[in-house]
Length: 180
Image (cartoon, rainbow, N blue to C red; front, side, top):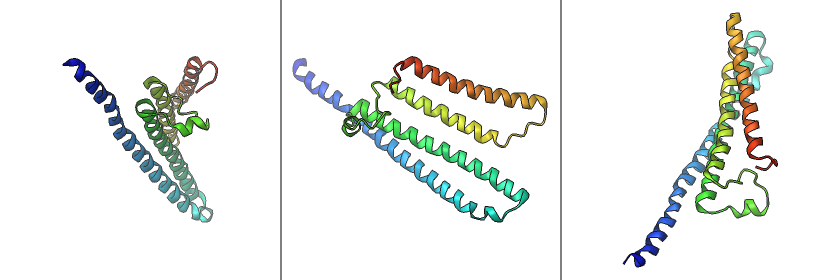
């Protein structure tokens, strides 16, 4: 009895991997949505700048600071969209099928994903970049008012630098020949 059921059960289990298609589609739609929102924000940031030349003094400085914050926020948005896209492509490649066009043309460096750990590593790098961009966005408006606050500010910048260094070292250790 088991010998007759086994191929059917194994086929069912193997084909259940296509459920990941739901996550692939949802992640892709999320990436498109985030790219769209960020592109609209960039458009309105640029439109808002049309009167920059007519401003003077404090108004111009305020618009400059606001624009820099919007630009940093846009970088953040595009990185988040990129995370969702990498996640969708990675899940598809791991569970459903290799994307032939990416591998035939040798176009894609991001799709060299052979395990969930590879996917997590790629996502972790982009998430670290988002966190750094978020820190930068907040740091734009910091105005240290005491030596201790200035020290904290400097330490925070040093920690960001250390994070970038460690991510680079970890990547170099896991990919000694420069692949990936």
